[in-house]
Length: 386
Ligand SMILES: [Zn+2]
Image (cartoon, rainbow, N blue to C red; front, side, top):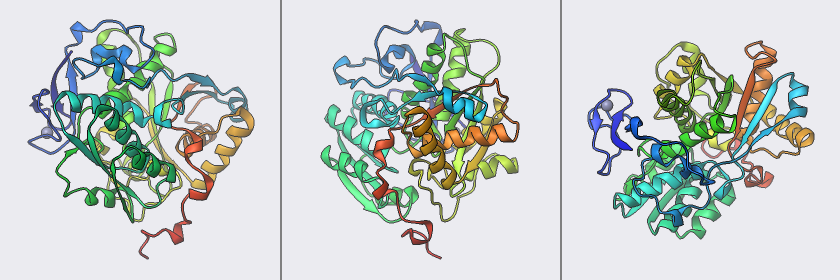
């Protein structure tokens, strides 16, 4: 049962039953806290709502769900042989709106509605905006969404079809944020509202439950805003407190593109926070985030679990996307393919052992990224100013 919101930086407690964005004291993200003595085992629902006791919606409406969650964990035996690794894929392509953003949207929109919010606004790299606009439509909430002009075309179409107001801007998600600054609706952008992460954390609960209530050795996550990684880490801590898991945490790995790697740079420098990544560009659109708001939480989670952060280049990502389709019949999204490139690199440098059980996240459907809209080459990208 939800008790309060706690600042991830200064620990200040906030009321969870009024509309909140960032910490009133230090403007950092707020994390939902629960009375974990009153949590029952998962229900029989075949969706993320099976973990309702650790979700913030006090009275979930069963009619609201589109069936989000409980995506399969799929072995990748041929790729595992090729890379001399042990790879399992949590496949988020099989979810409403075709990306894992549906988890955060389902929970975030349901909670916003419960708190009486009239509508939401957010900048997006595409998939989150599509998910939030569609779930807002289901909940009867207004939405205003801003996205960069080279976001995947299908995500624009989803937003427009939902009846949301769509604003297209040149540049990155940082520029899109400026384009909705004047809108007087609830700001649902990444980590500026506390409940998206609660939806995303169910990936952590599912991985553990689907493996038979145990953790893998390593979880590899394509990191843009990092909400899923923060959420999985939060879920692991909650489950440990609940006594559902014991022993060491899985090592959490953040993978980014060499074209936008603020977390990797901060990790390598031993820094507690990232610095803005200038001229960010990658075909793996979902991880093109030059300065994630939750950078310090991501870095903390990686270090605390003995994990790492690494960047892989777009050519490698595209090659591994093709190889996974050829060897496994799985057409990954580029962000998902980046996790395979990460496993390849970490096996090559010995960070990963051959018998380490690795869960990689395929965060969305490959078919959402048609090649015609793969984006311009870096030198032609409209937001590059040099
Ligand atoms: Zn604070």
